[in-house]
Length: 454
Image (cartoon, rainbow, N blue to C red; front, side, top):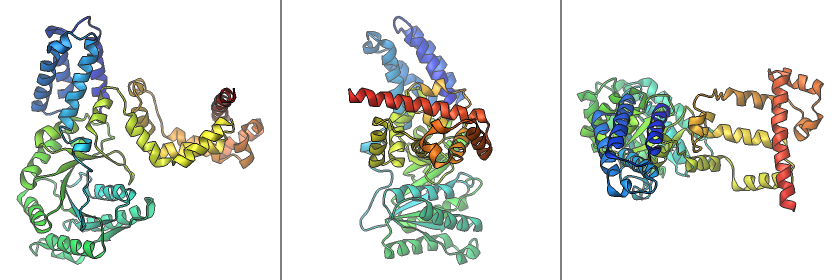
């Protein structure tokens, strides 16, 4: 999302860091460039003015002007102000978990948003996130305006239950008969939500997620219904789902919803898109409500808690190693990591091991996104054609090998390589490149094993 902004910030901070000393003149010049970069990223004008003013004031303090390394001090100031802008005081330990636990349950989460923002899909992703934490979830179809929304949510509930690991159940609650009453009977959605709370208590569910109705635009009917639901079930969390690609429109919608509902937080969808990022940088300042989750892909497990400090580090090209490690830990157990380490220590890495690691990497997300989490790598690889389909081709080639070939790639003569290329829809050169690359990895692990034996 922040590729262009990251490049602009890097150039600006690199220029000022190259100066012998920071002066009022070059700080002012830098802030002019920062202001332009933020406005081009569709950041709210008031946000831009406040941000640049605060950075300017702090950069001119005696502590910075007299610093031995003023360039590094400047980067720290910009980083801290970005964290304050998009996260404020709602970061990490001070805010607690994004979805609280109450006893007795259930914790009630009410989602709201305009049609097309990804609200129903986000409910499914949130259920997946909670299931992985060992919390049982009920998804309630309270969007009676769209009959398809009820079917969509039921499908999502079934998918989460079947595809996401964990013993905690994810169940669906819906009353299709109420869809026919919608618009005729006042409070049909309220009745469904009340009944869902009762059902969740009877089934000892930890978290109840209400997927409420949306509209193509904000109107009195929508807000009246949402207020009625909130009053009837008193949710512990009211989340607004907004589409990051809609830019300032998303921020304006968030402000209007917050004035009517008193939101607890925002879920920003399509965070992995190539949008300019204005909504992400503006919504906290404009609404006063924190971003709680970000949608980072289409899969059910592509929902992550929002960490302002990590996002600020990504914008400034400092990477996000913590998030990368967390993703890896989700896919590879400590026992599996130890087994792989032992095989590498003995110099016995096989193509089967390589395939297993490849599949783990794929589950972590798009390759370009993962590279962007490494300090300094994101900018360097910005224009490289990182194609995740190459991983498909690699996996296809390995799957076209026999068990003997995967154990020992040295047996791969020209005839075998031609057979593998035909079976995987690739060329013999592709197979040769894979074998060559894997051979280099094998050689490196054997050298490491030899060093550890000394």
